[in-house]
Image (cartoon, rainbow, N blue to C red):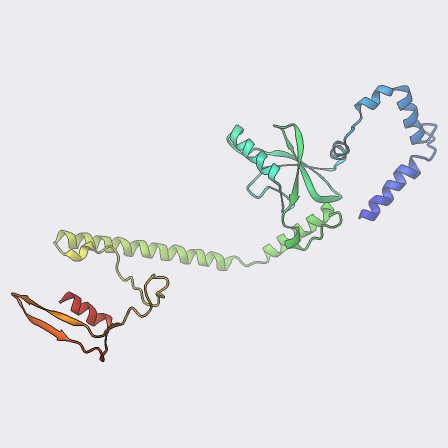
Length: 268
């Protein structure tokens, strides 16, 4: 494509412009020279900036809204810091996003230009996903290539069977309704127990266990399920309803007490 553009440029600028045209009685180049000499004020109206002339001759013109990912042309995102500044300005001044004018070169889509009405100039935005799609941007990327990628993606999307996704959504809705029903029943049961003076109604969560959860996630030391007693002595205590309790544990003997036994001793 780039080679064709160069050849077309040579054909128009060096061949056609220098060839005799019977309708104007001279070559196009000579007619241009004569017109400028007779009307020198025309030179002041011509573009002095190459970018302005390029924008005028660009064949691509569309209107797009700016999102957080930029603007989309043929399924490809274009973005830049200046474009995000324009997005923020539109939202601040207009209150909502409005469409902006986008111009691009049909023979080279490596960048697009968006008109910023606040600073009265065109700002440039660049593609963000060419590498992911395998598009090589070391040479001009024609618009037709982007359209081809867009068509291939649409065809691949249509081949996806979405029935399994729909079934998964129905399963989620079914589980949601089932859990809402169970939660409502548990709430009614707790209210009933509270009304009858049952303290179990104050329990907010049931069926929650730390089994299979690592001690790192629980932020607890390793081996918490085991209590090792070495060389400890239980002091003598008296209670009206309990007998005297006294135990001597030799330092050479270790006892491992499981969680259930530990809970029992703490309770008793």
